[in-house]
Length: 172
Image (cartoon, rainbow, N blue to C red):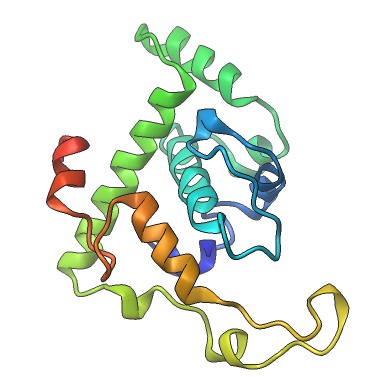
């Protein structure tokens, strides 16, 4: 999901596979209270949205992804650091909302340039060819149901465009 929906194309830093362990835990402070395993379809859209929003904030703070992804700071510690540096009282939810605003603004730019659901995809091979070895043997990526859930979590329409309500909610 992270590769399919990254705003800059398939990228291992968006939402950062190092944070995938967080999918195995409910993290309401990051915007998801469901658990999604590595091979789960259900719940993945909500988890990826939360991770993308939080990771977007980390990137906007110009923190090194490699240092942060090694758990240099917990989300609440990061909020304390931002509060100390800016003088603005920040909670983890505030940081996630900042990331959500940035992520949606990037999406709006991409939509203006013609990006839509057709572009939120993976190579055909991942979607059609069953793997033959390892823990994923016999599986293909079930992207469509995950995209539907992801768009719903983001407040986007079925074509991957932020709705007017979402734009207004985020003050964009």
